[in-house]
Length: 254
Image (tube, rainbow, N blue to C red):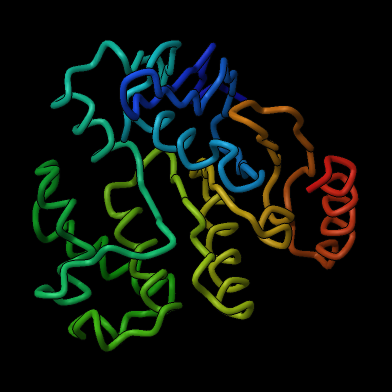
């Protein structure tokens, strides 16, 4: 496989006041290969979400290096970084931030219109295909308030994929869902990954992480261990994967 994203000695510090500095990321080294499905676990406050925000360019690192598909993020101007996120990265969050004055369909296509790299006809066709793929085609003209939590996460997935990103980032994408809806979302993400999209997500849920290919464990701002699980094929091995992962996490004291 080919390297898509790499961090070297990544550090992030927050200055909270005079003589009050919080060192959240400490010399973090990460490599993500094209086509991988990676999850990040660890206790609250370990730096998981901060890592995701810095590795994706949503926040600026204090020091170190983040290289995405050959581009050093620290060398990009804000406008260039925004363009990279818009066209090459997709984001799914625990709480989907949608515009309530727009229909579900319009929420999905908005970022593609902003990219201005395809005709409206092609964008609309892409949105129709995505909504059909994730099972929400009937919601196109609905308002945001007319959809359930699980449906809104599917809307978020469509929105994240509308520009055909190289990588999909997720920050607790199943955290606000019940177990059934969470399983359905993970099934969708697994399918998306099999189609070639690289995925990196943050989660507290071992059942979610067990669906991923590799699990990174963070503690006090550092990656202290990782577990290779291999590709999840969906052929009944999920219980064994969950047991393997739970045993590893127990050894780590999590």
